[in-house]
Image (tube, helix red, strand yellow):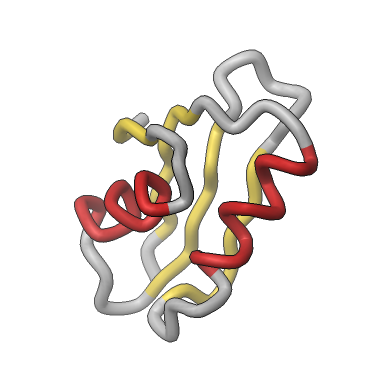
Length: 69
């Protein structure tokens, strides 16, 4: 299962909760997390059969940005 990393603008646990509402609904994602202590706010996603672009769009749908890291 590939691990993908994205730089985001997710800043706090409230922001993370908004993204969680979207990412948790995606059946292809088996694990994800955002390191809020890292200045780059790295989103790590483990997923089967989902493209980087789809992750970026899901994060965007939650109101945030993500770029491939």
